[in-house]
Image (cartoon, rainbow, N blue to C red; front, side):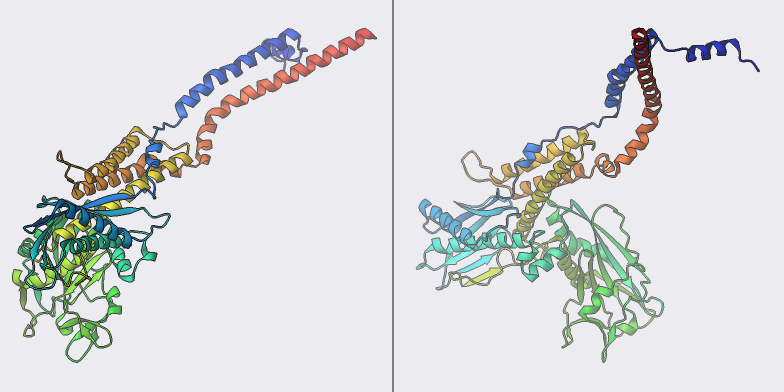
Length: 560
C-alpha cells in the first residue's frame, strides 16, 4: 500500500543528507532549549522546592558552657538585739564563703557548674524565697543551739562568752554547702559520684512538670464474700492534701481526682501467711500491683500521673502487713512506694468485721493514710527531708532542731530547696535542648525551620537571661532582692519553650524523609523534560559528526 504524499515528503526529507544550515538551525534550537531549562527551569524548581530555614541564634546559644557556673545567692539577715557591727557582718560573710569553697567538690568536665553563695545583711528578711532571717538570742546555758522554724527563720542561741561570728559563719556555710552537694548528687547524670541514697531518690523523683495528675483510689479486693467499703475522700483531701497542694501552687499544679473500685480482684502475688496474719515481704512488693485489672486510667493524658491506692484486702487475708528483714518487722505505715508510679497503703479493718458489712473510712480515720500518701507524694515530687540541715550538731553548734511542717506537709526551707533544684534542672534542660537543636539543624540541611521555631528559641533564650536578672537583682538602696521563685519560673518556661521547639511537628517529620523519597517525587517531573532534550543533543552531535565527515570526504575528492 503506497504511503500518503505528506509522509513520503517527510521521510524523503529525513533521508536527505544534512546541510550546514539545517545542522546549525537544530543546534540553535537545542541551545535555546538548554538555556531555557537552565535559566528558567532550574530557578523555578529551586524556588518552588527549596526548604525554608529561619536563622537560629546559634552564637547566643553557644555562649552557655559547662565551665561557666550559675551563681545562686542565699541572703541571710541577722536580726538581734545584741551588739553586732557592719565589720562583723562582713566578717561572717567572708568566713562563710571560705568555708563553702572549702567544702565544694570539683566539677567534672561535662557537668554543668552551679555555685551556691551566701550573702549576709542586717535586719529582717523579706518574705521572698532565698531570703532567711537568723534571730540571735543570748543563751541561758553554755551551749550554742539552733531552732529552725517551718518558715524562713531560725533562732540561734549563743552564750555571752561565745563569739557570734564563727558560729553564724559555720551555720550559714553548712546550710549552703550541704544543699549544693545534695543538689549535685540528685541531678541526672551524677549517679556515679553519688551515694546509694541519692541514687534511689533521683530514681524515684519525677522530672519537673507544670502539672501533675494525682489520683486517689480505694480498692476493695473482695466485696462479694467480704465487705463493701467507702471513704470520705473529699473531706480528707480538703483537710490533709489541699494545704500541700496550695503550698506547691507557685511551682507546679497538682490536679486531684479520686475513684472507688469495688472489685479489685486478687493481686498477682499471693501474700504469705503467718500465725494470725498475712504479710508481704519487700521482694514481693514490686509484683503486687495489678495494673491490667485495676482501672487506673487518668482523665489527663498529657500530665505525668501519680496513683495512690488505699488497698482493702479480703477478710481471709486480714490483717495484712508489710514486713522487713528476716525478723518480720512490720512497717509502721503499712505502705510502700512504687518508683515513678505512685504508692500503695494497706488498710486493715477492725477485727470484729463480719462479711456483708458496710465500712466507711471517715475523715479522722483517713488521717493516717493521708499522711502516708503525703510522704510518698513528697518522694515523687523530689522534696528532701534533710533541709536545711540533717545533722544534729556541728563543732560549734551543739544542738540543732528542725521543726516539721505538719500543717502543710512542706516547710518554706524545703519549698525553696525544691525550687532551686528545679531551677538548676530546667535551666540545664533548656540549654542542652537548644544546643541539640542547633546541632540537629546544622547536620540536616533539608530540615524545615519555620519562624515559629525561631520565635520559641528566642523566647527560651530570653527566659534564660531573665534567670540571671532574678538571681542578681538589687533594690535602689543596693540591697539584694534575689528571687529564687521568679528564677525557677523563668527556667521552667525556658525548658518548656526549648522542648516545644525541638519536638515541633514540622521538624520531626523531616527526620523521616530520606533522599529516596525525594528521587521518587522529582523524577516524574524531570524525566519527561530531560529525555527529549538529551535526544536532541544526541541528534545534534550525530549530525555534526556527519557534516564533518562529509566535508572531509569532499575535500579529499577535490584534492584527488
